[in-house]
Image (cartoon, rainbow, N blue to C red; front, top):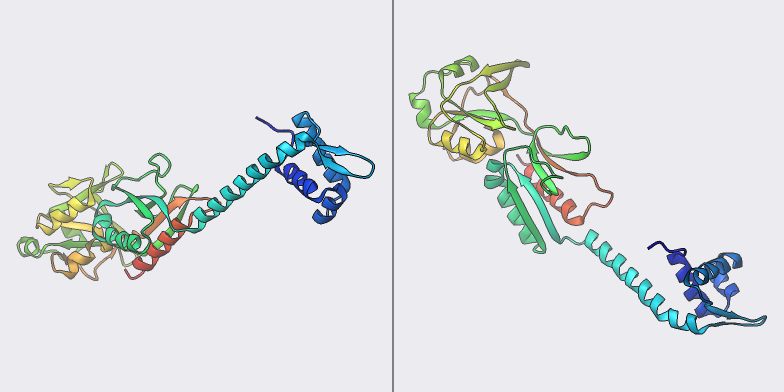
Length: 300
């Protein structure tokens, strides 16, 4: 219901009641007597009763004014408490964060980074959504999405977490039995393991050679909409993968996969971004998480 008076009017009423004088209340607040008088009149008109009894020499609270005082004090105190609580929510690292993650990267790298974050901030609850599809923050109720590639939606904010590129790799025992691979065009003779990107098969692999773009059509007997499945196929020796260097980092370090055609191409750039909604007041839990992700991923 709309009110014909404001919170400031209620605050002025309390100040007048405390000072016992409109002029003194005006002096304390550095405003005019007329402004104080107008505030009291608005309250009286809206409430349909006199709050003050005025004489030529003094001013006293009416019975209605006396009864109103504790209610106004309680209401203004409750608002102060609410504002304080909201400030605490904005500055404390607590509450729920809903995050969309790529399947492979999420399970094998980001999950550990997020575990470390929760150990440091145990009052944060995480809700994780793993998918290699383009996740919609609004439709899926997410606070943050970690994704590869540049941002197209200008209503969102993208914060680069680290640079990254794609690599060609295969299991050592696949390399032993595979035909010779001397150049990118030789990929046509191999079983290339592909995945879907936003419901479309990624069967035109993009490279750069001597700073010129090269598109290679690939073929294979396996494709999936889950990056981790493609990675597992590669480790199992079923063919060649062309995936993010971050995704393959540990597999290459442990010898489960070996890079191919080193120095003969530049892989497609797939920088990693944190994407989130633009807000006037960003919760501290989200700001702290973004800083944590950036710190841990800059080493890659």
